[in-house]
Image (cartoon, rainbow, N blue to C red; front, side, top):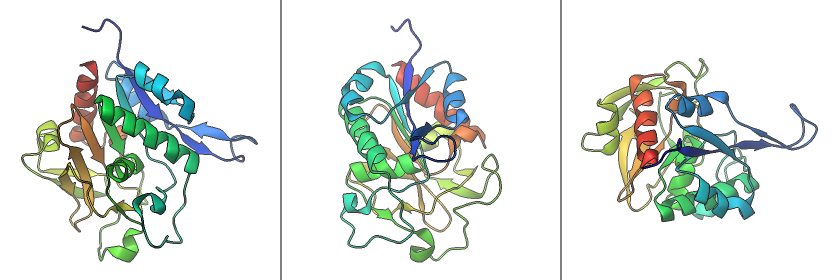
Length: 239
C-alpha cells in the first residue's frame, strides 16, 4: 500500500529558439497537469533526455503522452511518401517512443492524448493517415476553430470496451484538434471509439493494466466522460 501520492510522468512539447526564449524551450499546457493534480496525484514533466528514460520509469506510477504541434515521422511506420503538411520533432519522438516502450514492458498505466494516441499506435506497429482532408471524404471538422474547451463533434463509444465501461455512454461530444489519425490499428489493440466519418478516435491495449489512446483532448473536461477517464487512469496508477 503506497503512502505517497502517485507520480504521473507527463511529456513536454519542445520548441526551437524564438517566441518565449531565444534558446530551445519546453512547453506544457497547464491543464495537462491540473487534470492530474485535481485527482490527487503529482504531475511530473519529463525532459527529452534518452539517458533518463530508465530513471523516469523507475520513478513514475503512470505516464501521459501529450499532444503537440508536430507529427510522427512517417518513416517510422514505413510510409512510401511524406505529405507536405507533415512536421516532425525527432528528439521528442525518440524520447516518447522509448518511454512508451518502457511503460508497456513494465505495465505502467499509460494514457496517450491526440499525438500521444497516434504515437502509441505506431510504436505497437500501426500506421497513420498523414492528412485527413486528403484521405477521408468527410463533412466532420477535425481541426476545430472554436475554443478547445468546447465540443466539436460527437463520437461513438463501442459497447463492450474498457472505454465504454469508464465513460458509461455510447456517445460523447468531444473537442478535436488534429490533421492526422490512425489508419491501421496496431496488433493487440481494440478499437473503442470512432467519429461519424469512421476516423478512429480511441483504442485500448489488451492485457495491460491501463493503456488507452484517445484522439481528443480530455484534459479540458468537455464532458463527464473526460473526467471519468482521468479518474480511472489515476486509480490504475495507484495500483
